[in-house]
Length: 110
Length: 119
Image (cartoon, rainbow over all chains, first blue to last red; front, side, top):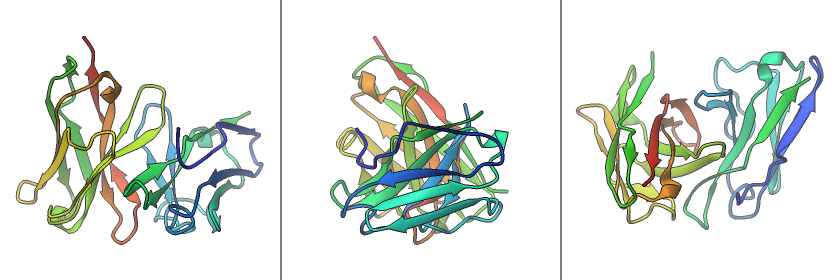
C-alpha cells in the first residue's frame, strides 16, 4: 500500500488535456518537492517533472506539474498516442527516511 | 552520453545471496548520489536504497534494511547492491539511477536487471 495515493487509471482522447493527482501527507508532499516519472511498457522510468514543477531538458512543455499543500498534480496537454504509459509521483518521506512512490496511474489514449 | 548499465540479476533460492552492479559512464560518477529502485512483476516502483556521492551516507527501505548493502567504487565508476537472505518478495526488476543534485529526483536510469527468488 503506497503512502502516496494515485488513481489507478485514466483515459482520454488525442488532443485532450488530462490531469493526474497524487495525494500525500505532511511528512512527504507537505514538506518536500514532488517528482513525476513516465514509464512506457517494458522500459525504465523517465523523469518528467522534478521540484514539483520543473521540466528536465528534453521534456516537452505539454507536461506540467504543480503542488498545493499535501497534494500534487501532473497535467498533459495536447495528448498524443505515445503518451500512453504509467505515471508515478514520488517524494521524500520523513517517516520512512526514504523516497516513496505512488502506486501509479495507467493512462490509456483512446 | 550518460549511460547506466545494470547487471547481475539471476534466479536464486530463498535465503540465497546475489550482487548487482551498475556500471556508469558519460559523467563524473563521483559527483552524483545514486540509488536502487525495484519493480515487482506487474507492480509499481519501490525505492530500495541510496548512497551519497562519496559513499559515506547510505539509506535503505525498511523492507531491505539489514539484508541489502549498497556500495560504490568511484574509481571504477560502479554502484553495487549486495542482496542477502533473499525472499520471494524480493523478486523484481532492479534499476540503478542517478540522483539530480539537491533534489530527490532521478534523471538517468539503467535498463534494469531481473532478480527472481523462487524455490
